[in-house]
Image (cartoon, rainbow, N blue to C red; front, side, top):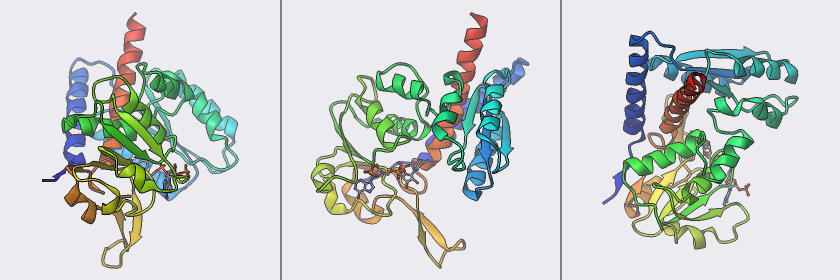
Length: 297
Ligand SMILES: NC(=O)c1ccc[n+]([C@@H]2O[C@H](COP(=O)([O-])OP(=O)(O)OC[C@H]3O[C@@H](n4cnc5c(N)ncnc54)[C@H](OP(=O)(O)O)[C@@H]3O)[C@@H](O)[C@H]2O)c1
């Protein structure tokens, strides 16, 4: 029997738990955690992501601010703004919405965010700590995957996790997280990418298959074994004239044909995607705790 992993339910529980904690802080007249999201330019997709993050903060009582810079803003203006929030006492998390306009160096911008406020988990220091297994901010989407596996009590220790995709935001961090000698991880990990000549050779051996490819319905039923746990990270638009928006969202896995073979599978939408913002809120709360503890020490 296949269990459909309910990302909506898990994400809602995490938000509710955070809301309770923030309500409690407010009841004591204490400062609440704050997240500032910085975007440059008018990319409609970025604007939609940024506003949904802002709404998610507001819904749990977290302080939220959106800083919108003009498309023509200089790299220095953006760095100065990050410096301002690095030393702000009101904001614990700083997120710069990517992609940035071409004239701005993304690496330089990410590196400018204080690691103490790096709630997106993209700073090289954060990633370095993740790789060596130190306490850090885990990037939100990979962290959401780990959270779903834990919630459904899916055994990971000694299991073969095959990650398809090696991006810095999903593939590499999730592979490194599953590799750690920790509860909810301790897996044998294989990372695949576009140079794999026969991808099935690897995916067929997966106990847990994590697909972060960016190609609709790419993983087919004959590429997985019976009983596999499937985590589909993909978010792809497929034209569909029957839908009001003219498209529908599908994952990287051919859900219809793969799900009968799987023991657990995440749907798209309704799976990993909903966990990302929940994890961002949790990271911001953790940043608040760390910063507050440091001030009291
Ligand atoms: N919140 C969320 O749920 C969330 C967050 C982030 C991303 N996503 C979605 O997840 C998907 C992946 O995102 P991403 O940012 O990781 O993508 P990305 O940066 O484009 O990376 C895609 C990876 O897939 C690999 N790949 C492409 N074609 C392949 C093939 N035929 N065989 C094997 N590997 C192949 C690429 O290999 P090479 O390295 O060799 O090019 C690359 O490593 C996208 O659909 C994205 O929208 C969802």
